[in-house]
Length: 264
Image (cartoon, rainbow, N blue to C red; front, side, top):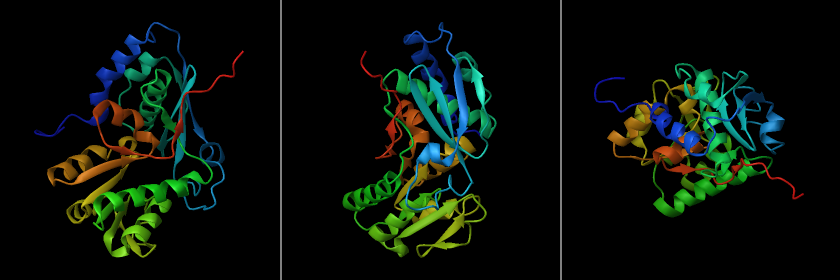
């Protein structure tokens, strides 16, 4: 961590995460955590459009289960994990795999204790509706400003273009097959090189929660804050971190993580 840079977001969640586990009596219980990569159908159902990253094979959803709750996180480095919550708290968060397990488990624990409800990806037609709600809400609140989307989500991008116009939408992404291509009249910039320019040009920034897993969140968030730009995090991945650290999160269609039990 460079001098003057804040502590990474995930590291800042360790202490409150540990307190929650302790306060709810989970530390002394034999809790096993299973995180496994979900298939596209398990994670997102059957949406009408087929261009979401999880469907075309760029990412997978990792799901953690803690007692009666589920928590999810997007990752391009999914692997299985079984262990106790103490082991998750001690994970070295230097890799995408470890960060994905930690974030999904944090989401599941916060769903289990009732601190956060929406920790599971929306399904079927909900992703399209989500994009429409996000775009219309931003337009109503801010007017026709320049909106930056960091992390290409096709449903959100298309809805932003409809609401603001292609000349008022900027998009960056890390996936090489997207970079340099035009989607809905907007060229996708290289997230490794063009995110600074996007932050300069945008008035409002939508940042995918997947950046918490791929290790790019902190530099982007710091860049937006130092430029005085409003930054909102979207997606179920960021549910727990946003709650603990006070980030503004927008995810209107994510689903409840606590499993419902039929009455006896």
